[in-house]
Image (tube, rainbow, N blue to C red; front, side):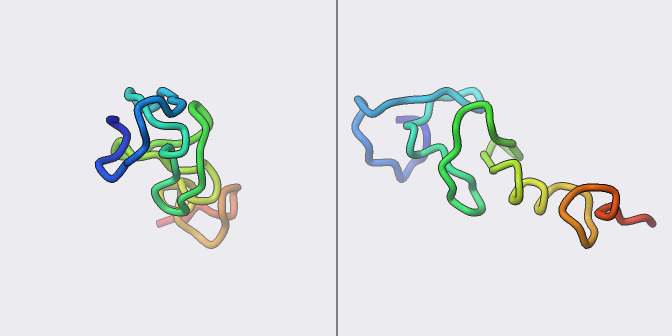
Length: 76
């Protein structure tokens, strides 16, 4: 398996391809909240998967008091 070093699933487990490598379907999870993701419906940062909302938006989106939208941007 090339998804995560801690993975103990058998090779026969269903696989998905995402971020340029193969994952066991249950191993493709958000790095922050651990939610199971599906290939093509998530965001990536430094080669790690994140759910689009709220995790990726909160961690790497515009900083401010909202979670997206015009009120989220911090002007300097």
